[in-house]
Length: 100
Image (tube, rainbow, N blue to C red; front, side, top):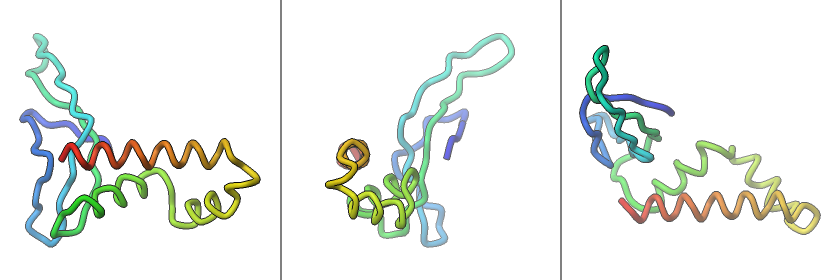
């Protein structure tokens, strides 16, 4: 989910209701005459307690549903390009989560 804030968001923001936001791809937007400095970023919902595995799963789920994942994995031999795209995306999610 795309978000914007006037303050630099924390990597993990506990919402106090059993879930947290994992914030990533943070980009500072320079101030202009019409607008103060702000931050654009992406975020996913992660159940507490937050850990590496839950962050990776939430990031992957942002793009692929459970059924999509099963279908891609099942057809790995018949559609290697589609599988490789999925695999590469999952690996990039692991890198984002490790940076946490």
